[in-house]
Amino acid sequence: MISELKEQFQSELSQTNLSDEASVEGLRLKYLGKKGLVTDLLKGMGALSAEERPVFGKQVNELKEEVSEAIEHAKEKAASFAMEKKLSVGKMDISLPGEGYKHGSTHPLYNIREEIIDFFANMGFHVDLGRDIETDWYNFEALNTPKDHPSRDMQDTFYLSQNAMLRTHTSGTQIHYMENNKPPIKMIALGHVFRVDADATHAPMFQQCEGLVVDENITFAQLKGTLALFAQKLFGENAKTRFRPSFFPFTEPSAELDVSCVFCSGNGCRKCKGTGWMEIGGCGSVDPAVFENVGIDSEKYTGFAFGFGLDRIAMLRHHIPEISLLTSNDQRFLEQF
Ligand code: DAH
Image (tube, helix red, strand yellow):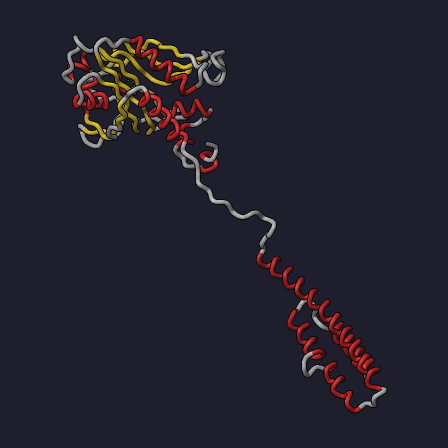
């Protein structure tokens, strides 16, 4: 009887689908459950003689152990089959590290803006923001740039009405500030400006920083000292500055501010067209005509002004080849800062 049952179990086990946990459990119940076949054997023990009983009992227990072991083994197999199936269906790679939180990084233009504010605020400059829309007076006229002045050609912009436009530079903030404040004046103003302009290094919208100092006895020497220090702050202590004669209607004399090339340290390379210098902005001594326009006595007061582009500085600082990268919101680009 025992050996028959054993054989029966072996053959049923070999036919059981081992990848199915329920079938294996069914097999266990059939043999080892309360009403299982192995359990039934023990129930028949009462009919045996006192000598037969322990021998039979021992054999049944051995069978029971054998069956339990085989079923335990089959269960393990079924469980690992089930896990493999789950993994292959869900395609979950449990070796991947968890996802971290991304906090982003500050924009390169924002960083430069903060550095500029930090530098000039420490030197006692008031920080102003100005407005994106200006009238003809603030953008041109008061800055000594009358309607037919040729320099207006370089600053074509978007007009909202005959008299209102998106400002082409931050220089209008000088006028607003001088209309509302008496000398001594030390201010910078930062913000967006707009021009009909678009190529690798020019965008229709970019950011500028304007600066104005007005007091008695202000000279071009102070302008040079201030901007030389500023260039060192932005490009490192070895940065050299050069003031190249130029023209702006609102300054006399006027100059372009050049900084020694950040790519070749001034030796001359392709980026600086072999000159060793890179232009970062314009500057000069305030033209007396501008003072007259805002009611400041040009006999008593003198001043200097400057204006430069933040985008240009960011491009030089980080070796960025295309200005549009700064506003295209490409995460792969922004993550580098
Ligand atoms: N507004 C000029 C521009 O956008 C830059 C500039 C030049 C500003 C000379 C100044 C200055 O304040 O004195 O090209």
